[in-house]
Length: 149
Image (cartoon, rainbow, N blue to C red; front, side, top):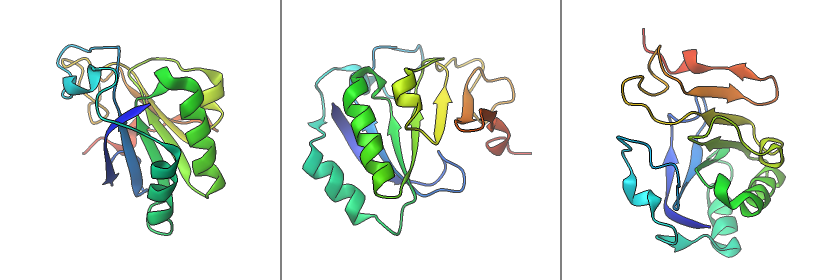
Protein backbone atom coordinates (compact mmCIF):
# COMPACT_ATOMS: atom_id res chain seq x y z
CA UNK A 1 0.00 0.00 0.00
CA UNK A 2 1.46 3.31 -1.11
CA UNK A 3 0.40 6.79 -0.10
CA UNK A 4 0.65 10.12 -1.85
CA UNK A 5 0.46 12.26 1.26
CA UNK A 6 -0.51 12.42 4.90
CA UNK A 7 -2.46 15.46 6.08
CA UNK A 8 -4.40 16.66 9.06
CA UNK A 9 -7.94 17.37 7.82
CA UNK A 10 -10.91 19.00 9.50
CA UNK A 11 -13.86 18.65 7.14
CA UNK A 12 -13.93 15.07 5.87
CA UNK A 13 -15.22 13.59 9.15
CA UNK A 14 -17.52 16.18 10.78
CA UNK A 15 -16.56 17.00 14.35
CA UNK A 16 -13.24 15.18 14.13
CA UNK A 17 -9.62 16.11 13.50
CA UNK A 18 -8.40 13.35 11.19
CA UNK A 19 -5.04 12.04 10.09
CA UNK A 20 -5.69 11.47 6.42
CA UNK A 21 -3.71 8.95 4.37
CA UNK A 22 -4.26 9.38 0.63
CA UNK A 23 -3.63 6.00 -0.98
CA UNK A 24 -2.43 5.55 -4.58
CA UNK A 25 -3.52 2.93 -7.10
CA UNK A 26 -7.22 3.77 -7.44
CA UNK A 27 -8.73 1.68 -10.20
CA UNK A 28 -12.06 3.53 -10.49
CA UNK A 29 -10.80 6.38 -12.70
CA UNK A 30 -13.95 8.48 -12.21
CA UNK A 31 -14.55 11.02 -14.96
CA UNK A 32 -13.68 14.47 -13.64
CA UNK A 33 -11.58 13.07 -10.77
CA UNK A 34 -9.71 15.88 -9.01
CA UNK A 35 -6.77 13.57 -8.25
CA UNK A 36 -5.96 11.42 -11.31
CA UNK A 37 -2.34 11.23 -10.13
CA UNK A 38 -3.65 8.76 -7.51
CA UNK A 39 -4.56 6.25 -10.21
CA UNK A 40 -1.01 5.02 -10.78
CA UNK A 41 -0.33 1.84 -8.81
CA UNK A 42 2.98 2.01 -6.97
CA UNK A 43 3.31 5.78 -7.05
CA UNK A 44 4.02 7.66 -3.86
CA UNK A 45 5.76 6.06 -0.89
CA UNK A 46 5.25 2.67 0.72
CA UNK A 47 3.21 3.01 3.92
CA UNK A 48 5.46 0.94 6.12
CA UNK A 49 4.34 -0.01 9.61
CA UNK A 50 7.00 2.12 11.31
CA UNK A 51 5.96 5.30 9.44
CA UNK A 52 2.27 4.60 10.08
CA UNK A 53 2.69 4.04 13.83
CA UNK A 54 5.03 7.05 14.19
CA UNK A 55 2.40 9.24 12.53
CA UNK A 56 -0.38 7.97 14.79
CA UNK A 57 1.81 8.42 17.86
CA UNK A 58 2.81 11.95 16.79
CA UNK A 59 -0.81 13.14 16.67
CA UNK A 60 -2.13 11.16 19.66
CA UNK A 61 -4.17 13.50 21.84
CA UNK A 62 -4.59 15.99 18.98
CA UNK A 63 -6.27 14.02 16.19
CA UNK A 64 -9.24 11.80 16.99
CA UNK A 65 -9.68 9.87 13.75
CA UNK A 66 -7.60 8.04 11.16
CA UNK A 67 -9.01 8.41 7.66
CA UNK A 68 -8.02 6.55 4.50
CA UNK A 69 -8.80 8.09 1.13
CA UNK A 70 -8.95 4.85 -0.80
CA UNK A 71 -6.93 1.74 -0.13
CA UNK A 72 -9.77 -0.78 -0.13
CA UNK A 73 -7.95 -2.54 -2.99
CA UNK A 74 -5.30 -3.43 -0.37
CA UNK A 75 -7.86 -5.12 1.86
CA UNK A 76 -5.58 -6.92 4.32
CA UNK A 77 -3.18 -4.01 4.81
CA UNK A 78 -6.08 -1.60 5.25
CA UNK A 79 -7.77 -3.85 7.82
CA UNK A 80 -4.52 -4.18 9.78
CA UNK A 81 -3.96 -0.41 9.74
CA UNK A 82 -7.52 0.29 10.85
CA UNK A 83 -7.17 -2.22 13.71
CA UNK A 84 -3.93 -0.57 14.86
CA UNK A 85 -5.60 2.84 14.82
CA UNK A 86 -8.51 1.56 16.92
CA UNK A 87 -6.10 -0.07 19.38
CA UNK A 88 -4.51 3.36 19.85
CA UNK A 89 -7.90 4.91 20.60
CA UNK A 90 -8.62 6.47 17.23
CA UNK A 91 -11.95 6.42 15.41
CA UNK A 92 -11.66 5.29 11.79
CA UNK A 93 -12.93 6.32 8.38
CA UNK A 94 -12.69 5.37 4.73
CA UNK A 95 -13.59 7.38 1.64
CA UNK A 96 -14.24 5.06 -1.31
CA UNK A 97 -15.76 5.49 -4.74
CA UNK A 98 -17.34 2.07 -4.46
CA UNK A 99 -20.93 1.57 -3.35
CA UNK A 100 -20.07 -1.41 -1.16
CA UNK A 101 -16.93 -2.66 0.55
CA UNK A 102 -15.71 -5.90 2.04
CA UNK A 103 -17.27 -6.77 5.42
CA UNK A 104 -13.83 -7.31 6.93
CA UNK A 105 -13.02 -3.64 6.25
CA UNK A 106 -16.48 -2.48 7.30
CA UNK A 107 -16.06 -4.08 10.75
CA UNK A 108 -13.09 -1.79 11.47
CA UNK A 109 -14.76 1.49 10.48
CA UNK A 110 -16.53 4.21 12.41
CA UNK A 111 -17.47 6.13 9.25
CA UNK A 112 -17.65 5.30 5.55
CA UNK A 113 -18.10 7.53 2.49
CA UNK A 114 -19.31 5.59 -0.55
CA UNK A 115 -20.07 6.45 -4.15
CA UNK A 116 -18.14 7.34 -7.25
CA UNK A 117 -17.60 10.97 -8.19
CA UNK A 118 -20.25 12.05 -10.71
CA UNK A 119 -19.67 15.71 -11.45
CA UNK A 120 -23.30 16.54 -12.37
CA UNK A 121 -24.43 15.17 -8.97
CA UNK A 122 -21.66 16.74 -6.89
CA UNK A 123 -20.09 15.58 -3.66
CA UNK A 124 -21.34 15.25 -0.12
CA UNK A 125 -22.23 18.95 0.01
CA UNK A 126 -24.81 18.45 -2.77
CA UNK A 127 -28.41 17.53 -2.04
CA UNK A 128 -28.55 15.39 -5.20
CA UNK A 129 -25.29 13.49 -4.75
CA UNK A 130 -25.06 9.75 -5.25
CA UNK A 131 -22.45 9.63 -2.46
CA UNK A 132 -23.27 8.63 1.11
CA UNK A 133 -21.51 9.43 4.37
CA UNK A 134 -22.47 6.68 6.80
CA UNK A 135 -21.98 6.09 10.50
CA UNK A 136 -21.23 2.38 10.22
CA UNK A 137 -22.44 1.14 13.63
CA UNK A 138 -25.93 2.60 13.26
CA UNK A 139 -26.02 2.57 9.43
CA UNK A 140 -27.14 6.20 9.63
CA UNK A 141 -26.58 8.36 6.54
CA UNK A 142 -25.16 11.69 7.69
CA UNK A 143 -24.99 13.65 4.42
CA UNK A 144 -26.93 16.50 6.04
CA UNK A 145 -23.78 17.37 8.01
CA UNK A 146 -22.13 18.51 4.76
CA UNK A 147 -25.01 20.57 3.33
CA UNK A 148 -24.70 24.31 3.88
CA UNK A 149 -28.05 26.03 4.28
